[in-house]
Image (tube, rainbow, N blue to C red; front, side):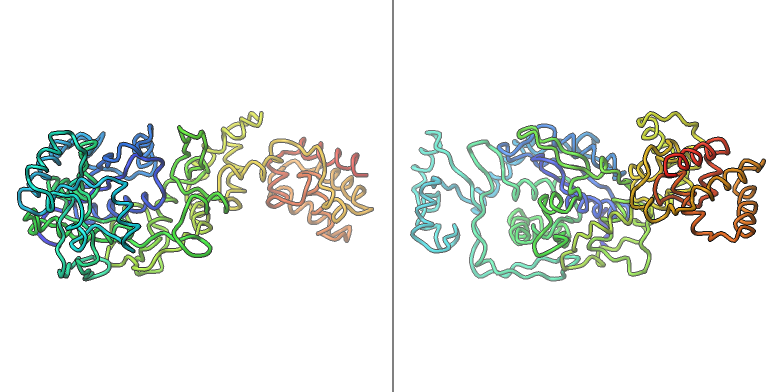
Length: 505
């Protein structure tokens, strides 16, 4: 690490919901900045006005607020390097386009989409580069007067970067090492379009990264092919001394099969690929989010951090501060990371276990209330204590625990056939009498008395307990039987026992 202050940026486009891969990129930028005492900048790349989606920017900001990933400056956070929204920086980019044109590093091209398509038909694998630019309509082939006249007439044009053949372009990548690409395979990328007076991604990013003093660019692997062009742009501007270090993160791959993770994978396998639920303003389609699906933000962060990065130890559970402490970008994988959504569920389960019973009860209490049950908080906490180790999501507690609050109306047929014997009604009638005589109805008060009765009667313990469970729960689930009966209390336990005897016979 050089003496230069670490400044990294996350720069999404407001073209829809934030993909979980983007969340991971932002997280790694956050961890890197915090690890090195640096700043994390939030920039909005909205130069492609055709793809702008209303509400997307607010959605992205809210996602990070929920996840606990904090930015130091940028759109909605303020700072000294603004504006941070690229559409508000037109004048800045226009100046730098002019610099490239004046230096002969770029040129103006007037080719229409139809003309470009015609060339693609004529020349197999056509690309606009040093080999073909001489046969196109641009400021390198047209007289200066004609170029000026076309611009005066309002003819639409683009500015292309002029890449020469025979160069070896080196990208010093913190994850992949030295990446060398020959300039012969690069095309003369469009940097600016007169139609909307806005730059393309390539120019806007280089100018912004330079002016905002970005020291490291940590982004997805899909941007690696752009890196040589960005290196050449830094050279063209004479900014090689302030060129950021690059790190290209591994792709997130499908859970099954080949290719990168898509929304279709989530829809098919039933997991979210967005941090928050997204309501598409154009189609009305609703896509699931991690927050609304019942994930804890800490679990999502912990899960994502380990997709493509290895701490070098066996540790899996990390707080955000522990991730900052452990993070080393050189330990990121070069290969893509398979998106194991089941592991995400496992992390959520582990965070349920980590949280206090009181904390989970606060989340569970509204669900209990929504099911028409009015229970004091201490009762909800007690149920959570008994049952939270059985679920991965708080919302899954109700179907598992409803019997604590609502007596069974029906009895599971399969369990009845298996567990309710010819003699069960007789045994349950006797058990009711035994329980009636117990004053201390705690687990400790009931268990020895009931066990002694079972032993004296020489009953099979399994027969008694299975029938007892069916009577109180309505099926074969739940914690220890004395935990259930102690929670219900003597009156409710006897009421349920007598009901089962009456119904099941």
